[in-house]
Length: 180
Image 1 (tube, rainbow, N blue to C red):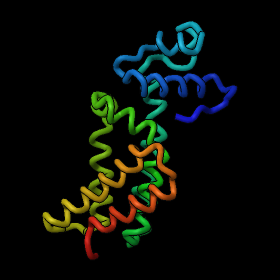
Image 2 (cartoon, helix red, strand yellow; image 1 turned 60 degrees about the vertical axis):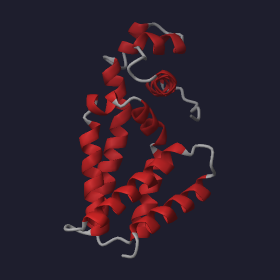
Image 3 (tube, rainbow, N blue to C red; image 1 turned 90 degrees about the vertical axis):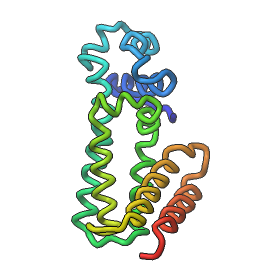
Image 4 (spheres, rainbow, N blue to C red; image 1 turned 45 degrees about the vertical axis):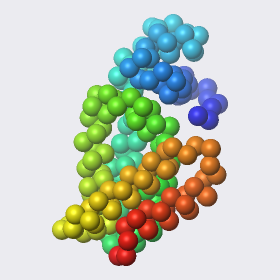
């Protein structure tokens, strides 16, 4: 995860929390752990975040806001080309890849934050944009594989150059959908 230089204590707390959540998992990271890494007291953290859950919500909220806005914008712009939708979806998943990796590694967080149902809703709405409201089973499976594979590629291949990864992932996702 890239380190941000910041004088904002709240942003620094969030950055260290993400680092620790990635290293240990959300459930295994306490506010004490975060305070120790920062070299501050636990009460100093409480000034900015009332609890670990409050801190976690502050990290996840931008992802929720971005995905909500993205899906709504795609629906408003419909019809959108498969290539454009897949490219922009890749970009969004890649932007939030660190947080998505944390959630994938600690699946209890999906339930804790009620994120699983939101992700399923976003995926369903995007699927409808890609294949219409009454698709065949084959089309639904292809769309699920395309969207899931695309987002997994954006999240899991950290060491690959962005443009090469984006090109390969979008191409594979579009191919997976088959002729449109």
